[in-house]
Length: 356
Length: 168
Image 1 (cartoon, helix red, strand yellow):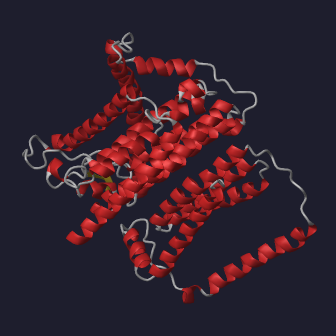
Image 2: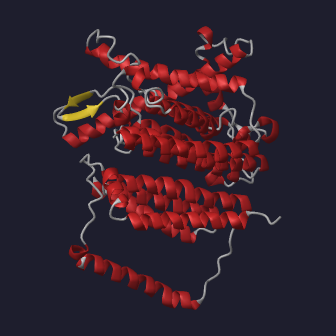
Image 3: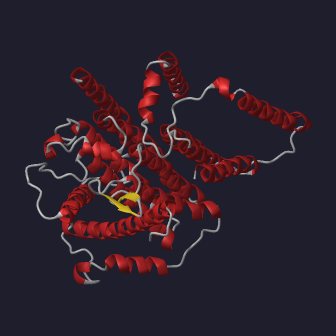
């Protein structure tokens, strides 16, 4: 190893990190789909997938093989290049934002004179803005897919998705401003550090009095990811399958994976911003036990546990809530969530100014 | 590293801009414009202006261009017909563009010392927090222009609402 110069070492280590995180994320996406099918099944008093492997645990593999072997249909009147590019944009954008998420406590290892933060692909000063920016680029995947399929249901679905995502992006972004004001930074590690003083009591959602912002974020995030109860872009009773009606085989799988990867990203951001990220809810109450390895792995466990709770909440909401009507959805976003988010910013900054 | 990024994304920006002019379909042109904006964002970032890069992506490619694409999709605009254009465009346009390019590069190259450089971009390696710098400049030195701009945008929004409202 020592014959490599620092730049090559840096590059190789980062490629390794990227590969590991990508594989883990895609596995997580596959198993989130399984989790959803299982939990929804139990909510509807049935088993869910249970045949492939023990408890149906190999079902994602079977699904993947099935989708991979399906015939890839290209509609005759579609705009070919855009039709092919659209699912790639959707999946890429949903996977890229994972890169700025810190999974664990800051843990730097030094290889060949180059320090690498092993639990975070890229520690960026403006991590939060990167996530928001990539989310806003992801709209193109959906918009172009509907337009290029040359199908009225797909077009209507993508128009709905686009306008819904643009509208809720505002409420989403504004709901995060309170947290940024409290942390004084857009770096996700700094935001996590700002709420790690006393365990759960100093998390933004409890001790930071950002619970209003949290609920706004939660609802806007459901709309951003086109999930129930805001899944109008793919309302099957009106629009067949919405923007991905014409897609089959791996292209459909890419949209499907993008949706679940977006869910995971949104859950990660909620965890980092409102629930203290990888920090323990007990703070310093529990003395550090085990060796350094256990102390490094424990934060990751907390992080995964919190993200899992959000994913379960997603599935629970999908299992219980009826779909909104479209005008209700728009009115809710612009007339309810946006003003509340602005008031939240005003109150938070006033309190911070008076205290500080 | 910075040079490599500049070459790749500068080239991409120019290619996108030329493609924008050559494409016949409005949606392809709009998408080329998105490519230009994203490459500009990367260039800003490589100069150390992270906040500007993020704002470029979120505001221009994420909001304004999405609206462009949205409108093109909604109107279902077809392919446009290319005319050869008037001769005046050829006679005045290309030399004019070249002249402006020459004048600007001449001014920037000769007067760069007098123009001074803004202190808003740190370097990629340094962890200088340029959001704090931008906000302190924006809310102290440039407070009046900033507020006037926001009022201008507010007026534009109100105008759009008035235009869009149906007469009773």
